[in-house]
Amino acid sequence: MCNFLKKWLGFGNRIEQNEEDKMKKFLIVGLGNIGEKYANTRHNIGFKVLDSLANTESVAFESLKLGDVANAKIKGRTLILLKPSTYMNLSGKAVKYWLEKEKIPLENLLVITDDLNLPFGTIRLKTKGSDGGHNGLKDVQDKLQTTKYNRFRFGISDSFGKGRQVDYVLSEWTEEENSKLDERLKTSTELIKSFVLAGVNNTMNQFNGK
Image: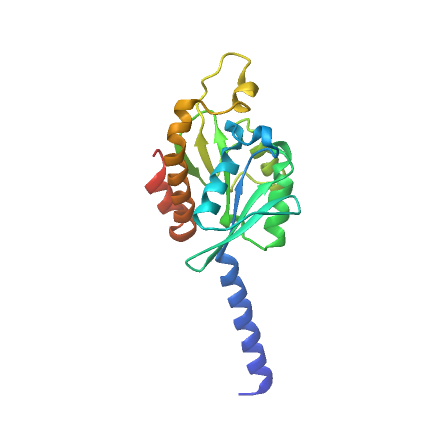
């Protein structure tokens, strides 16, 4: 075999390997607001889920461009955990930057967010959908120019009076909710691992509604 052909075949193998490597890399984004005053609020459940996963995998976050980032390895997959530092309403900027920087395919993106339309602690994975009035999802949709990306919705219920929505999502969990949160966070980390290892469809079948 001529040297040119050997080199060409080698180049082709490298391209194939690079594509395979891309499919093993995932961007897991938890939406929330930076700052101590928001740390334990309902709107920050995305951050809390990522903190739980990072703790389980014994990895630490570091402050990088547009967010706090941690890297975890799970059975040959690389998970880039991102907590945007842009505040909720500009979350899409950080998502787009890290997707492009790490060359992660859109199907390997998972965005974790609070959801007023689900009872407390209910978890639901979807592959597409509207922003549902959520400003973080609205900006992600705007920056990515698509509604077809995976999102993990964590129910926070809608137990607030008329005109009190903002106060409610930015308030802290009740004592009763806090008592159940650890178990819900554990299940949430299991969902993320399943998404990475078993795929979105299998994960939806196993976890949605739990």
